[in-house]
Every structure is written in C-alpha cells, then in structure tokens.
Image 1: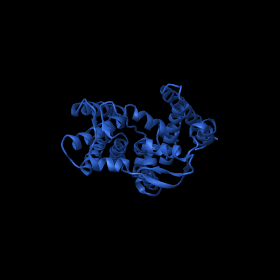
Image 2: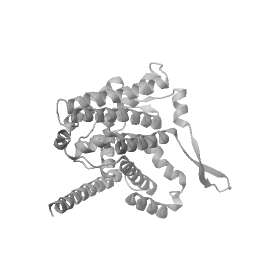
Image 3: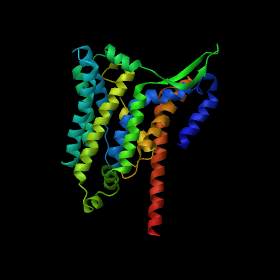
Image 4: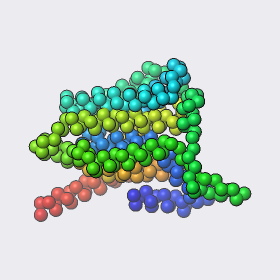
Length: 322
C-alpha cells in the first residue's frame, strides 16, 4: 500500500502538467484493470493453498472469443454470452481442480496444459478478430456511472469523474472474497492447507474437497474476469490477454501472497494490480519509453518481493528456534 501511494504521488508531482493528478486518471486504473482484479482474486485463492494457475490468460482469451462468436455469428443474446463465459471458467476449474487434487498432478503441469488447450481452442473458434456489435453488450460496456467529484475545464465547466459497472463488480468480488477468507470455515481451511497440508489432514480437514472448491472458484472468477476484460475490449482475438496470467501472479505476490502458500489477502492483490496499472500509466504518460519497461519494472518488483518474503520467513524461523 505504501509502495502504491509513493508511486502514484510521485507520478502526480512529476506529470502534473500531463493530467496525472486528475481524479479520472486514478479511476482509469480500476477501469482498465477490473478483469485483472477479479482474476487476481481467484489466483490468490489457489496460491494460498500452495497451488498456482497459469491458464487464466488463455481462459480469458477463450471467454472473449466465445462471447464474441456467440453474439456476432450465432445471434445469441448478451445474457447468453455471460452464461457461456462463466460456464467456460467453471469447466476449466472443475477439470484442473480434479487433476490437481484427486489425481495429485502438479498444478503447474495441469494449468500449463490448460493454458495451451485454451489458447488452441480460441484459435479453433476463429483465427480472425471478431468485433462485438451487439447493442445490449455495447450498452453495458459504455454505461458510465458519474461520481460526485471531478475537474473543471478551461471554460469552468465541471466534468465529473466516472467509472463503469465492471469496476463495481470487481470491487464487490474483492469484498466478498475478503469476507469469505476471514469469516468462513472454507476460507480458514485454505490457509490451514497452505500453511501445512499434513497438519491440516491431522486436524480432520477434507483437504482434497477444499482444494477442489478453490480451483472451481478460481475458474469461475477467471470466467467472470474474462467477461469483464471482454467488456473493455469489445472484441475477441487469438492473442488476447497474452501474459495476463503472469500479471495476476505478480500482482498476488507483490500484494503479499506467499508462493509457498498459507499467507495472502485479496486486498493485497488489489493493490498489486494497482501498482501494475500505475507502472503502465507512468510509462505511457512519460511517452518516450518502450512499453516493455512495464514488464521490466514489474519483474524487478516481483523479484524484490520474493526475496523480501524469503528474508521475512527466515527471520520468523530463527525467532521460533529461540
């Protein structure tokens, strides 16, 4: 949180003449990353259990392509496209969760296969970009919710800041998952399994069933996040959301989720996503740097936080020994 605040305030000071300090610039962080916030919440759940899911980028591409194809080529409604999106995510969650939990295959291998399968299936549906023209869908995508604050233009006219419904959905998911992790048996079980799976078994927890639920919920959130992503892009194409899985993992780790499991919050992941978005906004506003600097900076931060996690874990072990 401190890192995000420092980065954003620095951007407001340095790029004040380019509008970085305007309220709408801050709101754009949420608008642009609403899908990633939801997907990051699902990623956090499986990482808390000690697992991982690198298929979410391909699932997002498949969701966007399927929704676009269903509406434009098959004449389906926007509501049907939502159902298809969620169903795709749930099916991925069920299959991958079963392979990981009941067949005990490594999560990385299972979700790597899911990543290739999802991207390949996207290309099978169509290798061309499908732009969405469905009126209901575009109405959802372009519906603005004006906020009570904003800026004044040169003529003294007040221009309110705005968000889209995707932002409200994303923040609602963060709140619901936070409450679930903190106040439900299922949420506490996830932390117990990630902390020490053998101890969780000895405590009488149904480890396999709990992990299965985590992957199904992760799949559902990947489908939902994919649809929110689609609302931003209003199109489906094969290369869509490429690398999104790395953004989700990096956001979770920067937000404090341990790769080894047992520790993490979706609020932390939210700030990880905002840091990611801030880096992108700073480089875009600067104007002369390559977009690849976003990846370079994010990679450096990811390495820093992984090392920081290792140092903190080592210090805790030493204190326990004393």
